Length: 165
Image (cartoon, rainbow, N blue to C red):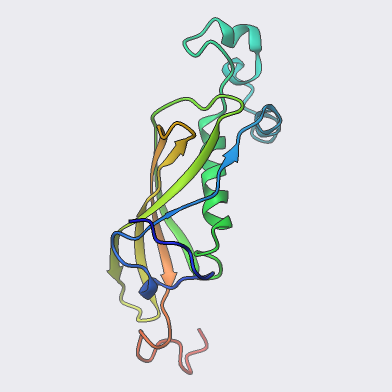
């Protein structure tokens, strides 16, 4: 079931295992790839040389996998539900499953996989499956994010009350 994002900055307590959120789409352009190559220093000809790439398995240039993963992080942020309530990205596991070509549109699908209490009552850990899918519905990146999230004051008795945290 896809849960609409109804508000910004959801806390640990507002997520339920199974909740799924889908981002708006983002079309990957040649300009994105050129900018990322300049920023990262990754000028692999698979991404930057049309003649070289035309002779490879994809028949054309493709976007950097790390660029697409970064776009996924941005899409997650744009959805708003993590805004101001994420304390830390504790772990990110990435598996590249398919190529993203110039002009492809990608979406992030966040699904709550697991929740864990922590030793501090004002925090909790949420693990999300975070695949990136293209316009054809094909998963191009499988990701898992482990986030340390704020808890609501009501759900965490004594949390941050008079503790200066």
